[in-house]
Amino acid sequence: MENILDKIIANKKIEIGQQKEHFSLKELENKFQYSKKVLSFKESLKQSSTGIISEFKRRSPSRDWIFKKAKIEDVIPFYSENGASAISILTDLNFFGGTLQDLEKAKNITETPLLRKDFMIDEYQLYQAKVYGASAILLIAAALTINETKKLAKKSKELGLDVLLEIHNEKELNHINEWIDVVGVNNRNLKTFITDVQVSFDLAEKIPDEFVKISESGISSTQTVKNLQRVGYKGFLMGENFMKTKDPGKSLKVFIEELESK
Image 1 (cartoon, rainbow, N blue to C red):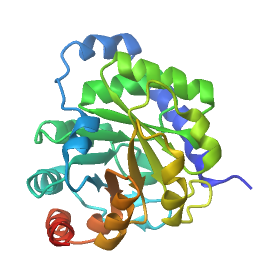
Image 2: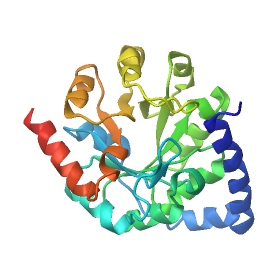
Image 3: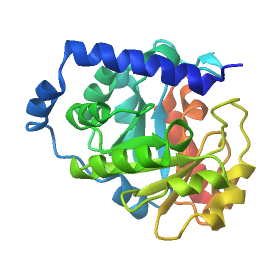
Image 4: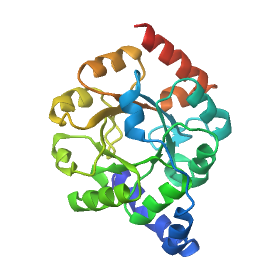
């Protein structure tokens, strides 16, 4: 049976092909010359006391629509004002309800570092990320070969983008290379979409200390964040916990206040 990740990657290849026909790599490269200088995703995490990476996500394959009518301008400024160390923007339309225009809008209304959250399989997407305002891009080990990870990470650094490598098990540690800035452990298995925060605890000591470590998915309590901090995690990517509420920015504020009071 085809798993969810395979479906997403197959669709992504078609999507990229269509984008290239509409807007060539050469045109992107020309636009790249005028892209905005952005703050470092990695440095922001290192300097933050909470490390909360709040995510703008309208839907998910695991639970369908979360906040269907969410608007960038109603969420992003308040994520910034209320303490987000970085902001993740989903740019996949078919499975997550996001677009590159969401990233571009966010760039124009915040100075907080932005992560382009998507299934990156082509250098073309890296140019897009830079042009539309990202500070960092995501590389998912489960979607790439070790050589593909290395090639895309190296190119990202050439473009001035930080690289977040996402892993889910010990075997995927082999994808770490010298161009990686941050290693994220996704507690959600992208093949089954089952979530278990224990995955982050199991892998904590296996990730070299030279890398900033973050935990992703399934985090909903401040105590979980505190426990993860104790084993070396500096960042915590949280989307549904905030986006499932009427006011994601306020929910972030309440969460950080509770976290800092402990």
